[in-house]
Image (cartoon, rainbow, N blue to C red; front, side, top):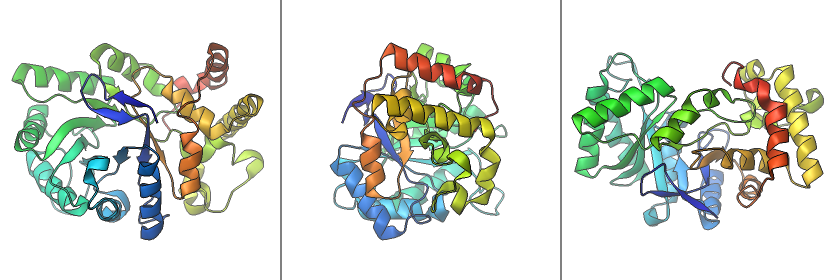
Length: 317
């Protein structure tokens, strides 16, 4: 495994992380625990979840899996998306953040979160309030580092400016959707991260499996995103299917899988600290790990950039 600092922070993370939004859903508890242990036993330290994943089951399963070996992992979770019907059951207010951190700590069976992330930008709450709440969590020891998810470049820049002017904790990272099939973040967010030393944590790195080529020729594999979630068809357009086929062809010429190639491409991009790849069985972890030490030549990177260039300006995945 290779490790990198999360942005300019002192926190070192595995270049390959594990996404857990399927745990307690598409993967049952025992399967999820096996996947978690297999990932960590192979050097993956960064485990990403959220308070809303599978109705809190993801956090609960992770907590059970690492009870007694908390020191082996870096736990990243999130808050901000709707959690109930109450007036304050969503957003980035002090009320909501303080309420949700306690639930996440309890479910994860820990007394601190390594990276606590605001899941989405909250236009109704002043950034000063959000960042002061996060600063208090760091001061109290309940949180080590803070980050954002699904923020645009201007939202991140405004957040850093508020933190600087108020002497509050700063976001160390930002988590966007990013892949060969979803390159819109390269227009503004990636240059921002390079300039400000923010760690980039891509999610949906395989575009829900599209980049593995599994949907070529109208194929719908059993257990795939499309098989389990019919709404996924809205993301599966002809251009993305064609991209998956092109990536598969380039991978075959290199003698590697399209999965490893797609993940490795992200690991070669500026400011990327760790790539969150989901898995519902141990074999997927093994396949994802092949990307870690896959060095891509300038010619290969150019070829991948060429076949995916239209996705810099396409709608977000």
